Length: 490
Image 1 (cartoon, helix red, strand yellow):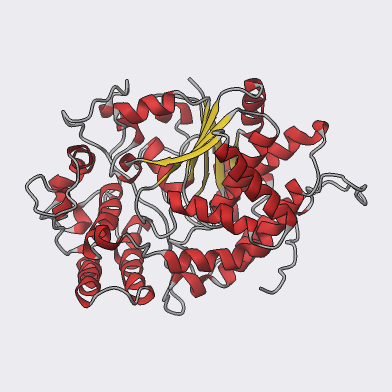
Image 2 (cartoon, helix red, strand yellow):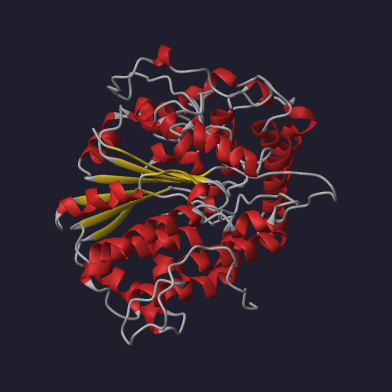
């Protein structure tokens, strides 16, 4: 990969030449910008995007409302009737979620066929059938997934628990895709894909090709970051400032997902300028640093993960830092169970990336990878998965076992756009709605790190809105060039 020049316009402090052994932070934001810029330049190489010249198409994640059944107990303390309505795929053909339905999702389906020669003819045809259902304005009819039906004969029949989690979508079976809520429909799309390729019979990752290509693109930026944090010890006086920058690095890492932006007219200048403070519409990073310091090396931090590749890498680097420098005792990573949303991180992806860091031929990368492996062996770092992370429901409706698990945490990092929409609700909120009003059901302190990739946003000020709308009046909600670092605790 050819070197990418550091982005201009970043406000680094002038520090002069670094003394030997000094913690090197100058490259940190530059590498995030450089990598994101490079990915955008080469996005068609690994997204499979086929965007007509002069057109605009976007990429993002999905969300929903869950009807709690007798099989899953929940106590949210939030009155559902106080929430605005869910976004519907076809309610407005000019909005982003409609473009997701009729443009992005069919492309993703056909890219699966293109990238996986091992699919049988019948499996490829089943995936193509899903793509055709979504075209023509989403007027195709939703049909059930046999594995998720109580009376199904699938040998890999879902448990009653899993069926309860998927229950919210059942009322849309037999209706047009365009009539479904975005959250329900997009998540259900990925369950349909799993059925179409008979995933349980082989358990191959049908998104392996774009995932591996993303690592090839990320190598140089990954090494810049590991050299910044692991080539020498961080002085005590600089730890908190370094932690704050790593939190920001995790935010911008979220921009690089492989459901990827098929946006042909991305402003490179907008990417270069994104690390300016005005591009973080809400920045509670200092409060998060103070919260972590107050743990005094005790307690547990959880990550509800989003994407594999560069984003998971930044999550692991932050994990390394807060464990190595004793901000907390334990870290738990929450992964998806099955291949999902193209780039979402599975448990096997965490294992692969740790091995990958150790095999890059760079001492700083090996230091991070091996140290995290050692921490895993010691029981201080663990990873797990749960079917709820793939359910078409909002987090307010999380089942009691998930609530009990998260309640043990002293801080939960909620990563990415899909998790954000499930966290606050994929609804027509006024943008200035207080963040705490939408998350006060959550059982633990939380930090949401999310770059804007959909039309759901809360917790920002009028001043911030005016600033970003003046910079990018058309795409500020979906370009990924703006983001939020939002913090709340009970």
